[in-house]
Image (spheres, rainbow, N blue to C red):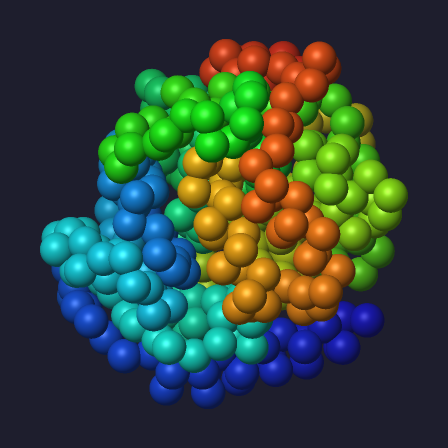
Length: 332
């Protein structure tokens, strides 16, 4: 098994090396990256409305530089990002799906610029929070992880949603999406350990409850390993859900205790979701087997209400910790 996974990792790295030719630099400010800088990596398309808060939130956490691939946006995303002094930007018109949903492009950038840096890999609709994130910078967390001899940090992707129809409240660029997306599912999660990669396979939340209730094994997986002390020999296997070598996925305790973990607040369900769902359905770029997700896209385009009488209102990280969705572990 170790031999096969080692060769799989080498194939992924070689694949990413070849895909580097699909990227063209819009603005490259990576010369400004200093030793010890915390880096964030993301692939985006038509996310101009989300980016002001996304960048501001992660800057406040302590991200020093953003390395972003724009997948041929048409809404001003590229122009906005090019003006940000802490962003290096690449552009590609190539297939998102055939790049392993952007992973090949980001792996090349991580190989080239992320070696020996703590690297955060997130989508534009994800907001990282962790214990004490409002009082302790990200560097405090990474320094503690270094002291503990850990090179990765896990997080649950938590779907946030409003009460009422998704289109009922209009989101404006720069606003905190948590002002609208105030609710989440707190207790309908199924967790199993992947036998090969040793990552946690977590399914649940409103998408499993409403859109995949008849076939829950097809529901999106919610466990991620978004923060890694990168080495140029590392590679993500499936988005940030799992990585190789597989020891990077061991972000949980099997002996009855708890490892420190975070949350990726998933802000997908803003008022723009109907239009985006119709676009994703037509482009067929977001899933290997897009036909399985046609009903899902149709449901989102129908402007549903995801709230139910078991929905839980968001009250901050301490509330999420009390619910068992994240943990400070031994980080006090």
